[in-house]
Length: 104
Image (cartoon, rainbow, N blue to C red; front, top):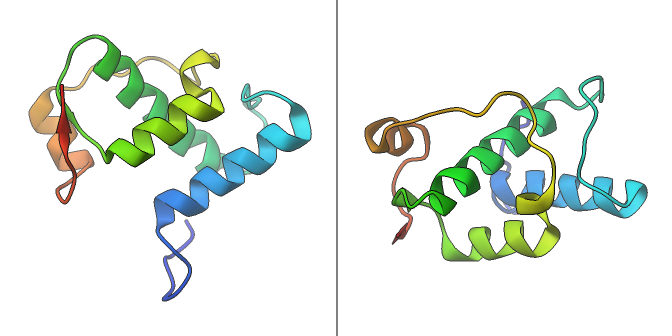
């Protein structure tokens, strides 16, 4: 996985930019399973899980700006990558820790 370097912005922003470049090139967010950037596929799957759980009324910890960016680019409209993941709020807090605003 790519490491965050000083001055490069957040890792989340890096993945979002890569996703935006994919959409600009392909016109959609339906990344094929054999896409060479496996870490982007995994990241997109996690973001889809977050949006799915949020839309189901689960309170999640995510930056509101990140939520808006995901919705604006069309992540909520893209087909899900991989199986849906069911996570408790405790698991979500462990996987997506602190410094975020709780929505919901």
